[in-house]
Amino acid sequence: MSTNQPVIIVGLTGGIASGKSTVTTMLRELGVHVIDADQIARQIVEPGQPALDEIVQAFGPEILDKSGRLDRTALGQKIFADATLRLKLNAITHPRIAQTMMQEAQTAANQGHPFVVYDAALLVENKIHRFLDSLIVVAVDRETQIERLLARDHITRAEAEQRIDAQMPLEEKIAVATYVIDNQGSREATRTQTQKILETIRHNITAHQTSKPSHDGSAQS
Image (cartoon, rainbow, N blue to C red; front, side, top):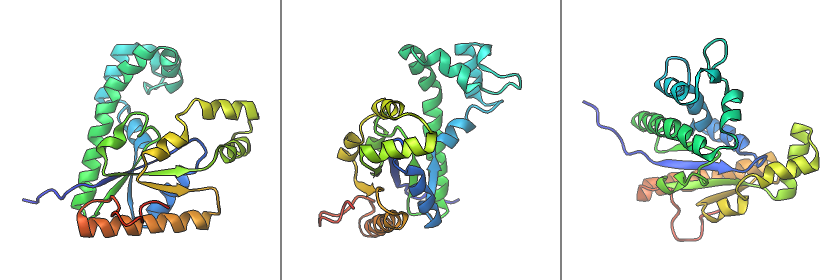
């Protein structure tokens, strides 16, 4: 009988338009097993899944579309301004997301991956980072966020600022980061930082069984 290998999970997060998806792509290209929280969140509410049944019981059949799938817009309208309903939804989905993530992480570890990266937007907001081995934050300054939002979403500057202000400030995420990737420069500069962090993580796992950096000042980019 095979024995489960130790699981080391590195968190990856950022802010709106900071370029987290770019780093995720780079990590996968560099051979890292990345677990996508958004993908898991979609999987657990597919038709036939227990979570979808519980959501219908809690919020009513009107949150389903004609094909019986979750209508995210209808659900969002129900919970948008009601913190109690959001907590009710989180109580249904979050434990299942965590369970699925751990199962995938264990499978990857058993397949020989020394660590996995868990890609999620709200790691720090939901305090999940406290339970992970380390945390990578992809960061840019506020003006860069605004410029990228204007170019990407074709919105006004005021709307861009509103979206940024609705999130936890990136500075607060940087404050709890183990590693920071400065994504304001070229794609190659970001890739170089990402590679350096991976080298540090792999070295420390081999030497110390943790993705955290040693105390020699080589922690953050």
